[in-house]
Image (cartoon, rainbow over all chains, first blue to last red; front, side, top):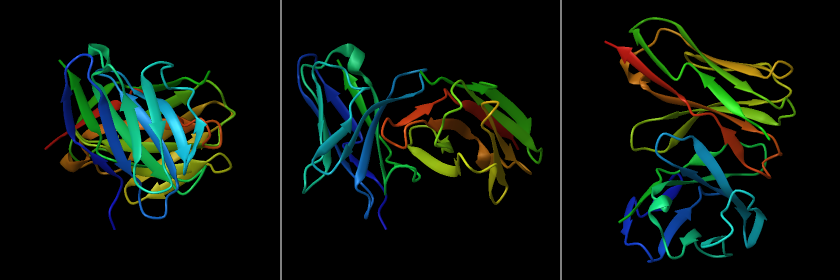
Amino acid sequence: NAGVMQNPRHLVRRRGQEARLRCSPMKGHSHVYWYRQLPEEGLKFMVYLQKENIIDESGMPKERFSAEFPKEGPSILRIQQVVRGDSAAYFCASSRGPNSPLHFGNGTRLTVT
Amino acid sequence: KQEVTQIPAALSVPEGENLVLNCSFTDSAIYNLQWFRQDPGKGLTSLLLIQSSQREQTSGRLNASLDKSSGRSTLYIAASQPGDSATYLCAVGSGGGADGLTFGKGTHLIIQP
């Protein structure tokens, strides 16, 4: 009964490289959310997806960030041309649907050098 | 724009004490409120989810209350144990899940053995 699986746990990228973060939701969950946690900050909502659809991306930076949740496979958060300010913990959560409890993964800690 | 505030930011108490963590939110038009705990370097564990129509939820030694009209929730922990040491996060759902949760910055709790 695996929970939300995120990989990698830690990711180091040089400025200008691309970062790809993967998230497999819990079995039976079709709703995926991405959050970012900056040092000394609370978690900030980035994007909400259902299979093959982006429902709400109001928290996503307009440039360099994109997310997808294909019909098959994990959800991917992609950050192009990373900068030092992108260093943070990125958490994925899944649920059965709106108003259901969110279950979080252990996060991917991105460090940009 | 929803804002969530948690007080206190940090709390240290001896083992065995009962304690209360506070959460307030600015927009009372919410769908639900969820309490999480976060251990260092880990993801979030869902503790309790209160729907907007409910006044409280209980799980073991934990009890969470919700007063939507005043924009407040409390998390009551009875007979605290060292294993309860963690950061406790309050999160408010304002859009039926469509716009994610708004998190407070958390209360860092230490239970002294």
